[in-house]
Length: 173
Image (cartoon, rainbow, N blue to C red; front, top):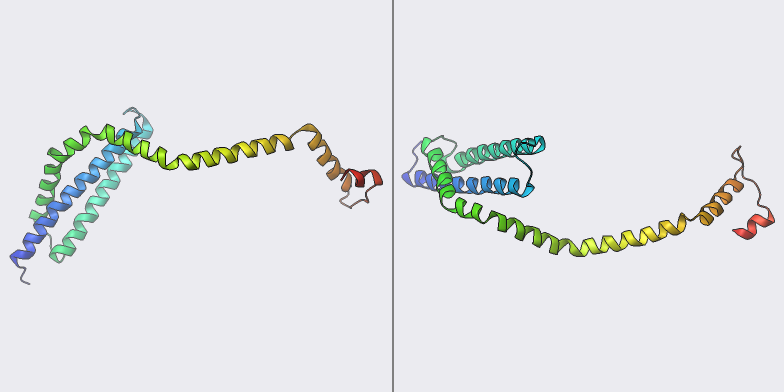
């Protein structure tokens, strides 16, 4: 089967673009690790770092396989992986350095944006919690509990049969 030079050119350009996108994904993982802010030797951080690296490797492999099937009819060409590597390195040397220099500011901006977006929900749930606390304090007062426990204990005997209320009990309910 004959493959035109236009197909090879498109495959080369798409491979370089995939390399740049994979480098952006790698920078996203790096920023996420910076945002966690834990020490490097903590076991949970090492596990999350391992999982992030594994996820990146899987995404990279799937991206290159899909790119090969989409752009070159499933035929492996060495220059596609070389172009992806060149795209990856070119982003890391140029835009990646700028992005990582601004990473701390991006983290602070993202946190401020999330606080702004979730503030109404926090206020709403704070008010709900306050009302529930008031209700639980009112219900858990001794008089209320004694009254309700007395009603429950007096309405049912130990055998499970329902007793008739006395006149005094029917007045309190």
